[in-house]
Length: 487
Image 1 (spheres, one colour):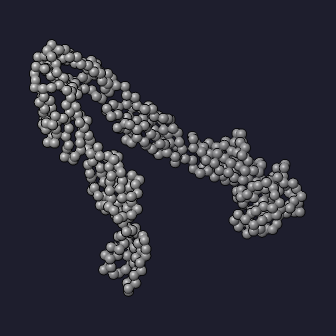
Image 2 (cartoon, rainbow, N blue to C red):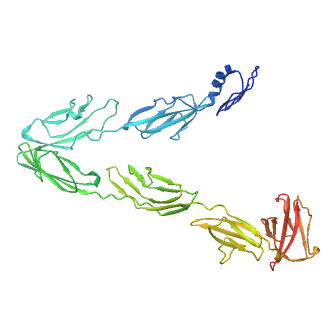
Image 3 (tube, rainbow, N blue to C red):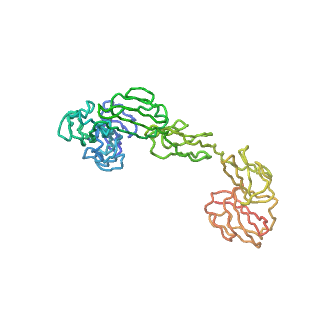
């Protein structure tokens, strides 16, 4: 019995029939079923397998402050290959995502995958960066039940979600969550206000159409009164415009707050350009990075797409940015045409005919355009190399054929043109009393095998064994031909 793995062949001959097992399938020829389990265990080592070789496990959460982060695979293996490009037992990553590694474990290719999730830093704890209080109302209280964390603390050292103060200034709060991911420290400035103070606030923001209705929240004061006489702490703006309210800060100040909302101008990038290609070529289209969503008229959602099927397509893309603004690009036309079937030229009596039919044609003789010869057939009156360009739309192909017109063959005496040896094996010699300009060697079907300026010695060793014609042309275009046998 012979067992073949990826690394070696082991010959086991102990009275059993031979069994051959490849790395792709089992082919059992032995009648001894008791050996099957043994063979499976031996051969299984040649298969690629999923193994737990990444130390961190299958899924982990990493604090965003801890990037770059190092993933580690079990040591003792060889030929590590991470999808990051690393080729040792560690890989340094800068972002959350899906990562995998393969390695060689004593001849077995094993692999493992890990999903890394990010614990994002909280950049905002307080709803505003400033807080106003009436001086007469001390002590003041800042904070909220919403920000309470057991490990949280203020810069005053107080470990509480609400801080009691009586001094103006800046106060900050931070905490460490259960995964030891330190959230961004947030700061609030406390400002004291004396009696009969008027506070005016205003800001301007730009919003895209998808952001409406937009929620405006009263940030400061009590008993708000909006321009439409509503008194809620929340106001919903349905369109761009100017919105304002007035409210009171305890008994010491009156507050006027105005927000101007402008329509955000969001222009989609330009999609380039109208494209016409001949299959099997495909069309690649791409937009700049930086958008959170891409929706193509083809139904695809990637930043770059490929179109590889026949047809005419009106292509546009709707892109969405991080503020949820959307816009559509211009529309381009992409057309993919089917390729031309490979043409061939057939000699039919005094005609050369190209197949297939039903396309556009242009004939050439000896690389020169034949004016008016634009049909699928052409009558030959002169010997030469004829080519035809077959096209449809932008797709085209061509074919060539050597035509030797018997009428153009000049009758000469045997001693005026002789070739030897005939049959020939490699080198042929030509003797003639006529001055020749060009030599063409063709097969019995007219296909050109060799074309060269006249020489008295020509090398025909590359020709296959068979019957050929040698055509010698003088300066006036007269054709002198001889037949020879290539051995």
